[in-house]
Image (cartoon, rainbow, N blue to C red):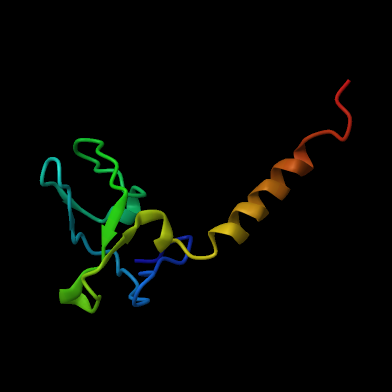
Length: 92
């Protein structure tokens, strides 16, 4: 699986492969947490932390979900610049 944004464990650099490895702590649903930015598609519980999956090469450590997304600052800056180009210099 390829994601639009590079995703890797902040502690060991393991990159998820699109597998459904993560289980919701609220309802037990299993899914790929990066397809939904940490929100369980079954019960809509938002997961603040994401565990790195050891049995497929990761370190088994947990990190803030947002810290898995690489180059997020650069991507956000590019999106802001796109929006700024759409806004007139002077609004009358």
